[in-house]
Image (cartoon, rainbow over all chains, first blue to last red):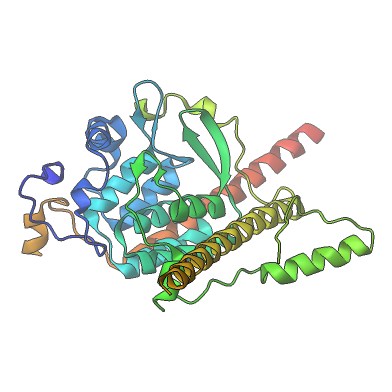
Length: 218
Length: 65
Length: 52
């Protein structure tokens, strides 16, 4: 129960070497354990119960909201996952079988994986969902907005800060490619060159390219 | 349920999928294209930097002679 | 297991296996589909009533 107490914490580290107890910022952790949602919905919850909570209560992603900086159920459950430290097999259930059915479960799983897994695995696990175009509500400082699973995954891969959380600095993808830890990513759309050629031909045919400002000097 | 006291706000943004599959696909395609373009620009930037390093190295070698 | 308790996070909560997680997802999905079907039926019933 004293997960909050990081002093002399002897718990196992996450696969990326971080201490799960301190991955979320201190102020955020305090707001989470003080929140009604955490107290009433996250107590005595295991890896299977997490799915119930997501399906029942998560209808938006986000960090903290409002002037009181209230943590979202999404963030509270991410905190719970940091305590539970689900194994890869369970994460796979969240991502795939569960993720196909419940998009917010997939969103939670990708967020958790970004926080705890090694960079190479983060790319491998998350990139397939750059294809998932389902809509997500996002609640932030500027109110509620619309995003998409693919956009959220992209944010997790390239941004420094997502959902009130500073993301640990991963090596860039091209660096991992140079080290031969990753193969180049293949987009479901094919290569950019092919797409541009396609567009050029469309332009010639007078249909106009609808790809808005894609101009790359090859 | 005190934790979702501001529920109404969330309903202003509709997250229902497959209302207009074609438009949703087109919007995704545009997002994916922007990502590909960004990646490409990063690679080009890196190549430019490498070329610049190479150029400077050659310069100093000539100066040494 | 003792180690898990020492870590302290989960207390007495029994850890779930991947199979249990899978089964839970399936159950929740079935329940959701069932609720959707019921909603459709009640809507149809209401429309029926209105016709009469």
